[in-house]
Amino acid sequence: MATQMATDHTHDPGARSWLASANAPGTDFPIQNLPFGVFRPAAGAAARGGVAIGDAIVDMAALSAVGVLDGIAAQGAAACAQPVLNDFMAMGPPAWRALRHALFALLRADAGGAGGDALRASLVPQAGAELLLPTRIGDYTDFYTSIHHARNVGRVIRPDNPLTPNFQWLPIAYHGRASSVVVSGGGFHRPMGQARPPGSPAPVYGPCARLDYELEMGFYVGPGNPQGRRIPLADAEQHIFGMCLLNDWSARDHQFWEMDPLGPFLGKNFCTTVSPWVVTMDALAPFRVPFERPADEPQPLPYLDEPGNRARGGVDVRLEVRLETAEHRQRGLPPDRLSATSLRHQYWTPAQMLAQHTVGGCNLQSGDLLGTGTISGPTEEEAGAIVELSRGGTRQVALPATGETRTFLQDHDTVILRGWCEKAGAARIGFGESRGTVWPAADA
Image (tube, rainbow, N blue to C red):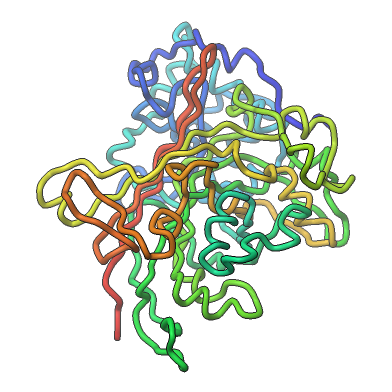
């Protein structure tokens, strides 16, 4: 099997849609993107799959019902008409690509006839739709694959030895809590828990005092694997449907206290916010980059190494974090940008993460969510969490628009993650946003 999706006519940067908003400069959702999600067109309506195009959504239930598609594309559209995308993701790359090609043909500027008319009739404005989680997430696993983030946070916990000895040999991960994964736009109560203040002989119970965000991306599993059968690295991307933005909120004081000796628990399980649109690996094909490991650092063991992953295993997704406080909203000011970086800096690729997940016999299921871990770059301005920017809370992070500062998040702060791919000779592909707000603790 091919390791990465190849480019084709759907990536033509000159292609235009008859929907004017899909051709607007800077749009996240041009005809070359076509990300999948789940939505309700109106309050009380049934959930169904959709595809974002410009400022609209293709209602896949409506399009499937009129019968203008045929073959495997029609089968894929019928699967997308369901309230979750699990069955469509399980169909694999041939169905994903067939439906992408069919939608591209119906949306392009020269589309006409009954098919074009049917697609026009199926459009729903994004502004009036309720966006939902795209899958029924059976399991959620979060990785820890940025060496820059690992070193930055490691210096806070273990100043003399910030990088654990296993980090450069395998993609580290922990199993998160699928039940508390939420879609962008809502919020969560500041978590309660136990922490030990510096110098204190005993822990205390109370609201998290060191609340943080984590700039991550997530990827959804397509076809799963039987228990006991690993997915080889060369086949891994045939099992990855697409990617989203992911904020793995973290209660750092609770996390650092409870992680001796095991991994994250209450410090991570209270909320994870994802963006609603899943950008397919097909759409990301023009933005693949080499997986590079410095020659003087450990090279992957053979089961985590193969030529295709070396050649194009990475993805150059540009990312940024913005913070909007209550003061921003009160004064009508735009949110402050805290940092910006790229997914290309990760120490391990999505394919390596998925292959590692299954090497011991773990069976992944369609619709499962895997997180990349915090994405930080090599410079200070590319840190993916406020614990890095504030150096463990010892330095104030300035918010120039309002004159405020932060070391960690305060109540009513809203964190906004954005991501996009952009380069010469390719259409800009966007991910939308992952937005979440901190509410006061529910009890004390």
